[in-house]
Image (cartoon, rainbow, N blue to C red; front, side):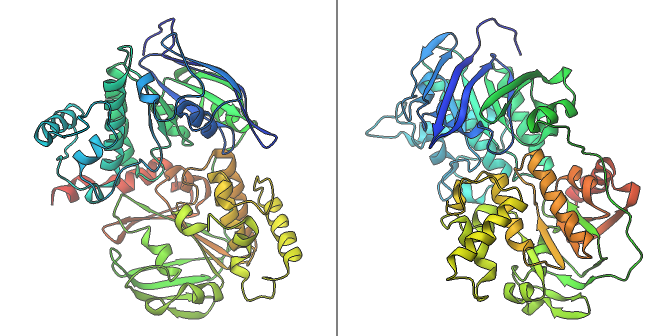
Length: 512
């Protein structure tokens, strides 16, 4: 990173209002050449609006933008950001899954390519040089659908960096905006992504990194800007800022991340799983006691994330039995409706596709589990129940009649949680419950799970976030190749010990 006097990007006084709500309120952002700059804030703080102003998706009500000291028009001409030195990688990556690596690299690159004829041989050679430059073991002819999640993310980042390098108007190295690229990646793949970012930084590219993961921010950024309620509350040099100070700036209050897991009373298990096998899992048996949070984790492909889906009747072919409060269920024939009837709630990792109906209203989403209970046509009662649910689960929304797609990620997750916890389940199954969720919303979710445990229910949480397990789990089962290879309990449930258990033997397995 350099301390150059002229910022690579300087946004001044950005303001944007939606229907009387000020999403951005005079926000400033200064990004220096060759630095990784974190853009932080809770869900709904204004981060997404700021990014959309920079990309040209939103026209600001007020504000000025400079790139390397030169004025850039606002609103940004839509589709022209790369010409001004700005390129974007959003969480969905924007790749064409059925196209090849080469086709994705050149898709939309109209300014550079001949509009009448593409020299495929030359483009393939150029692609190989580009992939080799960033040490990506990919071939131009590979189909993107066949790539691993981290390879897809790396491809999207390299494509964006190449575009800004090719199309910049004034010879600078440009700004690459990474809008939450890591939530769906396991930790080892995040490291690979960070390696790409560091190589880009060494080339002089400035990177704006949007993330809710404070550990990631502390590891990879040089500085960070924090937004709250549309306003900038501070900019911080990462090396001189404590984790606690950064969290407090984001949330607006001190948030304890220390382990606060109450002791369990002696009691027989509330649920037992026997002989569970699936696509990856092989003959798994486990049990969970009343009031217990049982964590499941492992490296990518270990199989721990299969457990919640299979126990909810939402998986594929499987065998095994689940005994819940004395009632035995055949997992092979278990359907989601059977699981719900048995008072099992499942919160899936793929929130936009499986957790909510994005085009339905908040009321319609909240009432889906209550279908058939005489409430579907009682509109006043449905709205009243939904409003109470939104208040209890601190879902930030304008009205119960707005579409679920309009909520931030954290508020969508709290809506999903509230939708199922209103049924007072005895067993709650979670798959990556706080993926892409800010630290404040995470604490709200942890509090709701504690309420389930306080009433004698139990929670099974599958996640790759070791810090989350340290905060909430009584026990952790570590999976490897579809089997349980370690169990941690009590004071042994720490981020370091979980990581050690996950990675021990990983190199041996990889070499076999």
